[in-house]
Image (cartoon, rainbow, N blue to C red; front, top):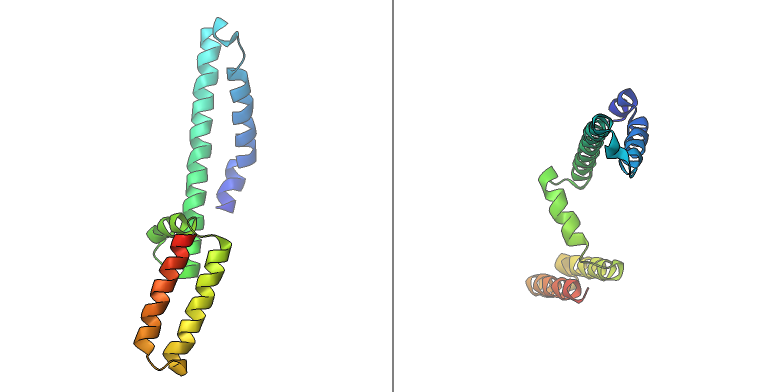
Length: 130
């Protein structure tokens, strides 16, 4: 993506779009309809290009996140949405609970199935609490 940004000079595109947006806000812009239409068309075109690049950048970062956490790229948006429901404290509590269950399942508890079931219920309760 960096090479595309360099070739297209994305910072310049953003500056130009901001400048055109400012020009479009001038109160007497439509005194000259041809000039106003030209500014509006150019602004719309630049804004579309900048938005497209931002969308591509987001998708590329989603793909990178998906690769790092080893899930399909389409799953990243679901995980991001779900993660907003958890506070840092809740995540920390859930991780500690999973670690305790891991030890229980590996022999620290007499009933591994019960330990796993209890861990699932505890993590659900932690998530619901926030």
